[in-house]
Figure 1 (cartoon, rainbow, N blue to C red):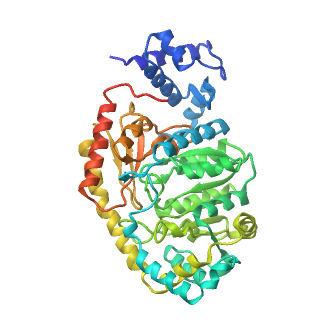
Figure 2 (spheres, rainbow, N blue to C red; figure 1 turned 180 degrees about the vertical axis):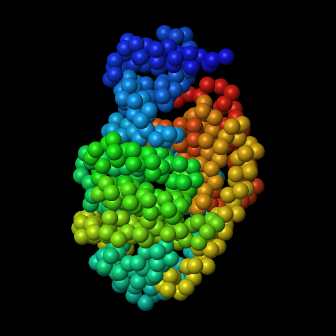
Length: 485
């Protein structure tokens, strides 16, 4: 038997295809649609979600639903590579809608929660806090007046030297003058984008994609062109080539080839090299985000795409926030042929990176303790993933798919289509659990039935109990029409 929302959606599709509603015309509001067809508001909401997914309707921020250019979209899909979704350009209204969804997340998770599985760091005890604190104390005792001076330059030479040695483990051959130290990877990404694009330009991003990147793109007045990822493979190179052939104004591709956020996939080496060839053929810049590159579970450190870069078109961004010290907010960028523009952007943005933190990291890395720390952190992450996966499979609704990462600490869950994980979050927070709803990982609001979990903490009865409670809440939500506000 066909569900009521599907019946209403089918009627609207017939009306749209018969030109009863023209492209760009405003559709009835959710309440108007519900009243016209004698269904609930939640059913009408699901109807519009179905039309969005099929390309017949689009939401405009604080304006309602409108008829999408469904003919062009369906023609493009017929010409796209088999089994590859059509890339979609994200305009201002959609990015503004993303900001609204993020505001909802921040409001729901403002208070401390027992299981804050939405945060972006590992358990504090998994970092070398004691060792870093001892080094910091030693520096402060030796030169307390250093706190009264501004840092200067493109980075502490001693830290750069240790960083360059570490980057060699992923195949990058760099000199001190190639490296610019930043205030975290976020600043590295911001100045990288500013160096290659101006307001109105288009940036290719992965889908799903880390929502912080979408925020940065919005703040810089850029547009995002979402290109889907292939499970277990990373960015779809077929879809990327299709996007670059059919969309103009693209200035750069931003990708996380090693342990992508939120999927955790690592591109094979051959695919990384092909990605670079595609970027080179279209004369674009690749901005490589490698913040999780040190955290692979099963293999040695995978090579960065930057390792094959011979003409300086890869801008490489990294950080110590995931691997060593989240609170330090120390990152780096290797700008290649755009190094001078990046240096200028950095100076205008924040002048320099914090000195004490660089001193501490330099001493810690010079001590030789980093490799052992990373091995231990990787082992801990690898051990908890199967436990969390088993718990999800046992307690979440039938049909739930759980993606285990190749590296990092994210679990990506795809729940049954009718699940609204943003609405479910409200229930979860009442039980002391937070996660990141999937709808944040696309400016267009896709992945509304998905969610991301951070499992980088010791496995415990509380963790198992929390996931069990979340799964049971998801089961209950599937027995009734989900609501959206």
